[in-house]
Structure formats: C-alpha cells, structure tokens
Amino acid sequence: MAELVIEADLALGAPGASSLERCCLGLPALHLVLAENQRENAERLDELGAALSVDEAGLHSALDALIEDEQRRLVMCAAAAGVTDGTGAETLASTMFGADGGAKPSLLRIRPATPNDSEALWLWRNDPDTRGASRSSAPVSWPEHQAWFEDALASPNRHVYVGEREQEPVAMVRFDAIAASEAAYAVSINIRPTARGGGGGRTALAQACRAFLNRMGPVRLEAEIRRDNQTSRNIFETLGFRCIGTLGDSGFDRYVCAAAPAA
Image (cartoon, rainbow, N blue to C red):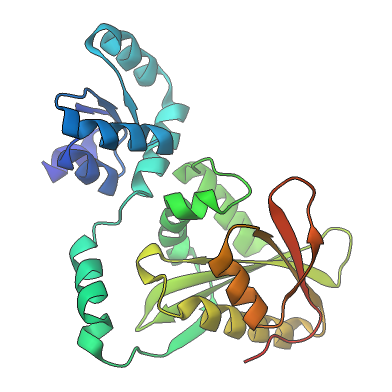
C-alpha cells in the first residue's frame, strides 16, 4: 500500500485511520464519510487543506476538477505532509517516559543550514501549529519551498541556521535583513513539531543569535510574534527581547533586542 500511495497523485477514500497514513506520505485525498466517527477527521483535514470531503453526488465533478488542477493538488500535498511525520510511537514513548528513557538530553549545536535541510524545514513549515502562528497560514507547496530555500541559502540578506541534537535537526532560526535598515534583522524560529516542549527552542535561538552577532557585529534584532503565542513570547522575552508595540490589527506584536541575547 505504501508503494501505491507514493506513486499516486490523488486518493479517494474514507477519512478513518488510513487518512493519516495518506497524510504521512503527503497524498491529497477526496474523502467520502462512511461512518459518523469519521466526520470529525474529515472536517479537521478539510480545515487544514489536506483533503476535500465530498458526497456521492459531487464526487465525479470534484475528482475531475482536482485532476485538472495540479497547483491545488500541490498545496493539498503540502498541507497533508504537515499533519503527521509518522513518528507517533516514538513521540508517545518520549512523552510517557521522557526522552531517551529519562536520560539527560544531548547537547544542541547550531550550524548554517544546507540544501539537505530543505525537506525537514518544509515539513515543519506546513505543520498546522506552525501555520497557525505564521503571518500566512496557507500551506507551502514543495516547488514553492524549494525555490525559496535555494534563494535563501544564496541571499546575502538572509541567514538560516539549524539546531541539531545527535545530527538530527530540531530547530531552525532565520535572520532576514529589514529593508529600511542595513543594521537591523528580523528573527524567526521554528521547532520540529515532535521536539516542542523540550527546551530546544530557547537554546537554539540563543545560540543562533550569538553566532549571527559574532558574524555580523552589533546589529539590532527584531521579531514579530503573534499576541496569543505565549510560548514564543516567553522564549524571546527570556533572551532579552522586549515588546515595543503592536503591529496594527494583525494580531502580532513587535519585539526588539538591542544587545546580545542572554545566555
């Protein structure tokens, strides 16, 4: 079944457990709800843009439309891939017993991003929680992301760092030059969904900021944080970022850190 899913461009199925298998492999789907206990799955995947629920009367027209619309399938593929990474058993075990069975977490180190990081960062970007905390909540298709990532690595105005533990990426920190000033950069961070809550976000942000300031000199760091994202606000505030105002009615606040973030 996995081989068939990988080769397929579109699936037709019920939104039960198999819908999560399709999401794990990034396969967009048309859903026919066959039992009442599937309805909540169908509604949530519709909301995320990972699938489209139809009834029998609208099945053929919806199928024809998606077959003809490659761009929409690509967006659905991106949304589906962000729903689950297939590591549920490991995540559950880690939640129950602690990472590595309660052993001390390995050290996190920061390095510049490489082309090999592209797929992981794409999956993190399309995670539902990440999308909900972003300026744009729309899924990003693989071709769009790949073009953006190649440009990001080549641009002198954008610097991307990856935090990893035991050679596994767990965080991304990005610095984007602010057009109005050569001495100011916007900072953003994204954590691998299965690594959230382990303290890696704060460590990655602190290390990346120090590495970036050592490279660039004394520049001002800014961040835009969604007002209801308390976790992100806490991470930035503990490192010396301070809220200096709201950004209109966008739901975001503006943070600034004029000095090197605290250790």
